[in-house]
Length: 194
Ligand SMILES: [Fe+2]
Ligand SMILES: [Fe+2]
Image (cartoon, rainbow, N blue to C red; front, side, top):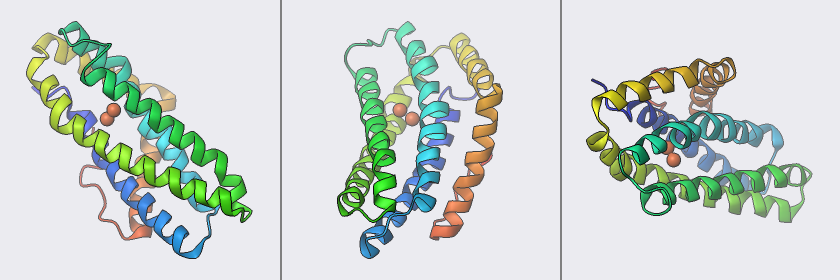
C-alpha cells in the first residue's frame, strides 16, 4: 500500500524546483534592479494556487486532522509549527504580490520588498518542506493505520478531482516545466505523477 504522504512528497519536488527558478529570477532581478510583473506574476500564481490551495490544503484539511485522530496534538508540536509556517508563507506571498505593481514601475523600495520577501519565502518553504519530508511525514507514515491510509488517499483524489483543482494541477505542473526550461533548472523527475 502507498505511503499516505506519497502525493505530498511528490508535490514537494515540483514546489522545490519552482523555488529554484524563483531564486534564479530574484538573482537576475537583483543584479539588474529590474522586477517585472510579467516575470514574477506566474510565480505568485503558482505559490498561491499550487503550493497553497492544492498542496497546503491537502495537509491542513486532510493529513493533519488524520494525524490528530491518531493522537498528535493540534495546539503544539509539529502540526502547530507547520500551520504557523503556512501562515508566514502566505504573508510573504501577499507582500510580494502587493509590491509587484510598484516594482514593475521601477519603484526602488518596492523592488527591495520583492527581493527581501522573495528570499525569505524561499528559505522558509525549503526548510518547511525539509521538516515535513524528514520528520512529520516520517511520523505520519509510521502512525497512520491502513484504514486511515485508504481514506486519506480517497480524500486526496477527491480534492484533486474537483474541477478547479484539476485545472490548477495540470496547468501549474506545466508551468513548473516551462520555468525550469527558462531558468536552466533540471525539471522535477516526478512531474505529472500523483
Ligand atoms: Fe506544509
Ligand atoms: Fe508540504
